[in-house]
Length: 161
Image (cartoon, rainbow, N blue to C red; front, side, top):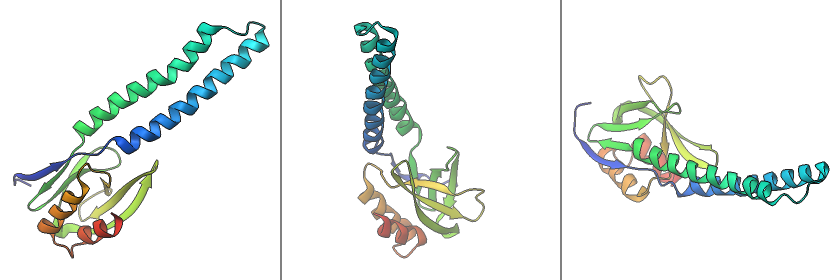
């Protein structure tokens, strides 16, 4: 596809950041409890430095995850063209699909995040269009304008968002 992009959209990292924060909070509780039990069984409870280290490790992992997430948001945009859509599949490989070649778009959820699995002629696997873009209403309006309100993707977006 050689046309210039009409607009580039990026994912909103907030939903995944919330999931990661919850996982790390529970991880921190479990780690501190496991270390406390281990210390008690070894007869050296309370070892404050070990407890502090076990409580801080999930926080460090959380901060590192957020940095990686911010990088992923920057590296994996969704691009609209006059003639189609450029997005990634589940393996992170980018594919460009022309509007008329889109066969279906089905809602799917991965780790609590909603996507449309967009199948098209010529694709080995469907592209995964995130439904948590920063400006989802503008994305939907652009797709309506470029592909048509009655297009497969247009109908799927309106029913999913």
